[in-house]
Image 1 (cartoon, rainbow over the protein chains, first blue to last red):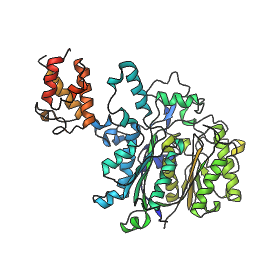
Image 2 (image 1 turned 45 degrees about the vertical axis):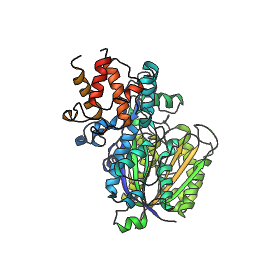
Image 3 (image 1 turned 90 degrees about the vertical axis):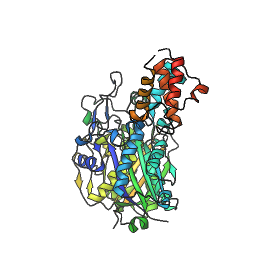
Image 4 (image 1 turned 180 degrees about the horizontal axis):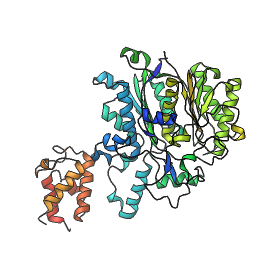
Length: 421
Length: 79
């Protein structure tokens, strides 16, 4: 099987625009969770979210005009615009901008989203209801289709290889990277632009997850403390938005052009719970089998893993089940691994989460730093017995990292990244 | 009704993001102003909204240039 390395990183997150800014704020213990100001939350039980800071680029904020011409923005819901921004950063970071037919045909795109253009669908529904079908924009469908993120990126850069999109709820970003890596391994492409994007922080998205009783509702007055994975006081996840995109490249292809190599994708494991629409199986069997499969694919044992980026959404049930599965799998190796949930700082980016967290795992390897789990003051009883990197980042050797993502529908994905010399 | 031409040009400039000088009466939306088939559908909708008129599909298919739009609207506009 061909080997696959990561040669480019790109991100838009509640902590800022770009990987460098986001990572330094993450390591500095900053939170991107704030009160929602751009729409009415008075009748919503959850009034906070991790939103991408909007404003001028010179102030480190996100301005869509920097990535998509104004006249084209009406053709894209925000999840596509975030993907365009993260893809631009990742592609330029990798230096892979082929102008020849072969280079373009051997480069594909695999950007998924959990929900896609939910705000566009909401607004389109109102138009049809109030003004009738003749008033609906011809861009309504392309605005909201999930695979249009991959479509727009391919059009912007001329990438004519496999063009695909994953949809597996909160495991989307991890599945996209894992599946795209396999396309490179199997010689369908030499380079894949892969990741996830999400922009569902809107009234209907907030109402929907609130109706599932999945969101934190007790910390509306202290937003930065609301996402508290593994902590006794946790009461649900905090919605987030953004995008994470990586450039995956066949090893020899990367070496030949002298590309900077961040890490190697060595493991990818998947499983299904076959249990419940929204709740994880109580014995953690699904996550356990995804992690086991990823390690097997990597040819590694738990003692080879120094850092785990947990799914850790800050829900009462999910966090304990994940910790239980990790402890069962790791055995004695639990004493040497560090595990944290970066959702404590940015919230849950749903379909983008797995991709953003894969990038955090890669940065952890690159810098030998485990990012912190914010607000972890008192780990609940079932979450004890493992280093959860409470409150502050931790400098430590990180040779390899495992990143977990579990989604509604009982879908699980684990990725393993390893340092490359 | 004398300002119909100006109102049409303004809508074209806004929706297609083109310079005003390029929006001459003989300019074709697709060939000269960079529109695609979806853009032209949206333009027709914008004309309908602005001029309070319904443009049936068979008539919309014949609106290919700025002048086509002005001529149609001069005849049918209600607002």
